[in-house]
Image (cartoon, rainbow, N blue to C red; front, side, top):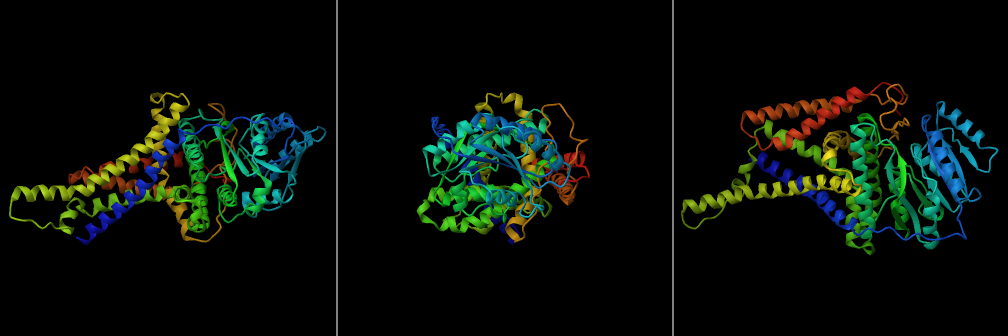
Length: 516
């Protein structure tokens, strides 16, 4: 009896938390409809100075492409107003490649410099802070190694800063160079599009806190310095700095029509590494920022609750894992949760009418589960509606992308175990975890092969856990079917299939290599 009540309480708690994040998707969907791109501004008479910071660590396949794209951007904006600084922490032959690039531009009107620290202290945040310490320019544009900014990027972005002195950050929309490389890249691209079409646009339109995404953006140097610069106590230095800048009274402008093409992960191991870093970094940032933010009543309730949901968004993955765990535990221990309500909350009856008692018992017995089913259904529908809205916004046929939506769903469920572990690292430890970058290979469409390149991601113990939980889920499904408990299969089946899917692709796509 007590076990059944415990299962009910845990199930209700998980579902209510799920509903918080699911309902927020509907809120952002509605808010995103109100997004309007700001009118362009003419600043032909004044162009602020810009330092273009390019943090690089072992990126031999993409660094030349990056600098070439940034060179075109500087020529369009004005070579006297911008310079390129490559912040090179590489410990392989990428350093030699960068030296060749610097020599290539030495006798031109373009200023291309390199900064080497000799160590990876603080990882990306440490590299950016070292560059910030040497920067005299009014603004800093940042691009990761796999990005190729368009030539008119600064020309279109900088006028907005001139018009508004309290504008601290401009974030562009990421697009995808290798979207059509394989089914995985098509699915991941849709997931990223959800963030930029709905989450970023919705928060901007609703007047809520936003975030700089770490690449494809411009930051006012003064605002960053006032906020304390780049700090390496989280793995999400971009998210952390974004909130600190906004807490100083500066705004973030999201330009949906300004694009920053970059790569998405080609393999499941790379995707898991990226998602794990984002999960750990964002939740550590939540630990750091939320106590002060939530206590500041001047920000308003809506702004604070949206910031809480934003910063803790990766808690969805521990909730997913908890949901799966509750389902297979309840199945294996044969917890008859559908009888809990009557036993726990007996009804006083007047008279002894059997029909009245049966109806009341039936209603009381099933009401909590009908409510749970409704809430779970709404959350599930939200997770499917948002990518469909994004596809329609880009004039991509939904029917032709159903397989990509299915892969995205499998990935979202399948990485929940990996991200639960990373969430635990962020919330339950004080250790500064290593920044493990996502490998990039400069491969687009179906041209090129990643298997013969360096920076492969090796197997780790999470793969073993995925196999274990896939097996547990399979056993629980068989057990549930044997005893006729078919309802629980609605939870067990998708998670078991997703863990098996991610495990299988991890085994296929992992290789022993540098992978750091």
